[in-house]
Length: 222
Image (cartoon, rainbow, N blue to C red; front, side, top):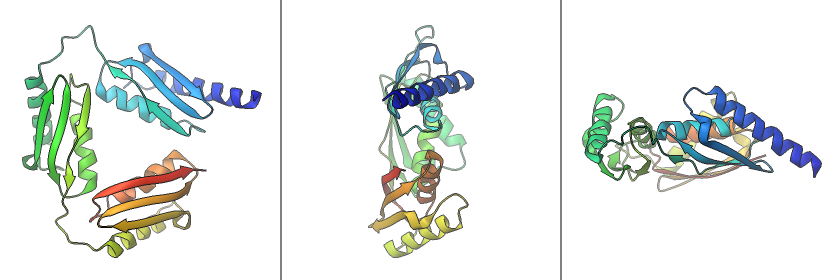
């Protein structure tokens, strides 16, 4: 038991230090709780982008198994932009970005909640559009309702072969320990990985594969 407590405390200290180090995060009102190897972030940060960054920082720490992000976006010292202003900002940011077609993306904002709807042609663009929108000032949360409509008709076997081939070429992944199943464009990942970095590498491999519509992530950290 004492070893577990020591590990939890070491993880907590490392997460706190990581948040303090990261200039994207204002950690003044952030608390870090650790149960075993499971981390929970609570409190508030001044921006949604900082909320995402805090989550990434916690996940990057060695021995962390999972991260629950309960951080709220609050910035009492700054006047909250109107929903109309946030919407215009998000639309402008998407229009400026060459990697997404903003004409197929609808943006609505209600009380600081941004909803993205419409369609994109690859799964990575679905996630990327959310990342672009997350930088807008004043938003509290994002609901990503974008659907993936591939322009290329790729069969499930071909999609699986592409994913496994990319994993085989990866320096950090062992494709023999990761199972890939594809059904109607839905990719189910299962198996074991050693680190969050390996998990994210496998996940990104699926995101970037043409023909993938969605991912069911069942990977387990060893």
